[in-house]
Picture (cartoon, rainbow, N blue to C red):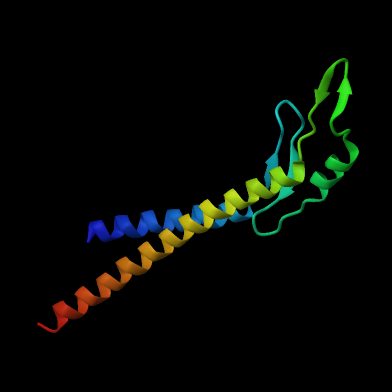
Length: 115
């Protein structure tokens, strides 16, 4: 019985972390630059990243060097995709754990009552 409760608790925490991870905002920064907001995994907002990409000077030569301009939209898309991958996976594992434990409890309860 205690093992079931532990599994349900772990599954609930995993599900909760997965859901919270989907709604927490994502931001990116390239090196020492300022952080750019990307929205959340559920509701991406790439307007700040696009504005930052449009305002920056891409690949401008300065004193024999080339300043490389990071693509903030691409960085945001990548971080949002990564966030979706791990949060959806974690939430699904948590939900499946809860369903499996509850199903196993119901099946074992029926088996005990039929004896």
